[in-house]
Length: 229
Ligand code: ADP
Ligand code: MG
View 1 (cartoon, helix red, strand yellow):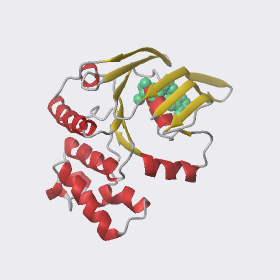
View 2 (cartoon, protein in one colour):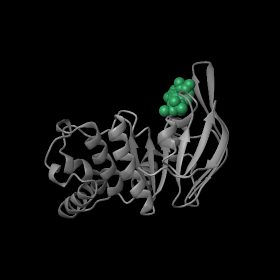
View 3 (cartoon, rainbow, N blue to C red):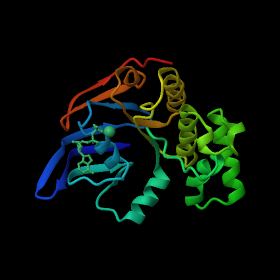
């Protein structure tokens, strides 16, 4: 599903440039559940953002589902994201002036699904994450764990091939983190390919493979016995 070879990324700041990803090689097959680990500043989010077409690499190659990702204009990149990718972030990124159902239905709006179908589909995903009765509530009426479940429902609504999660449990207490991880494990059990950034060992051990980054280089890549929650 993902094939990355010799990928480099620098951030330019005035005359200076910070070399953040240094020759990354990474292959991910359909159905995998990969944790990207590393300390703060090691380049995890940069790598995930490039995979998610939210940012561009400087050199090397990146293929997603056999499609070579190169300089894409924003419209094309946005189309690709809507069609192939689901995102989950530490800060949930819900739209606070839209209710829960409208948040989940949003990717379907961009896919030009008509209103009654998208509400039906969105409600199905809300029920899947245990939040059917919350459909008409506003995001600020929900707990952190509930907000993240809404974000997961929204990510799934677009039927993405690949789910990208950047520290999805980073703002949650341990019990709530584990509930969210149980849901993400179930989604992977159903066949979804998942890449998840985390800096917490116990969360990474709930994935099936751990890729460790240090200063922009992959220092280890191992299959693990998944800890079930
Ligand atoms: P991580 O997610 O592992 O904490 P990041 O990928 O966010 O690391 O950042 C890697 C390095 O790149 C850090 O030193 C960070 O400060 C820098 N960086 C990240 N994004 C930008 C940006 N948009 N402009 C300049 N520097 C950035
Ligand atoms: Mg980060």
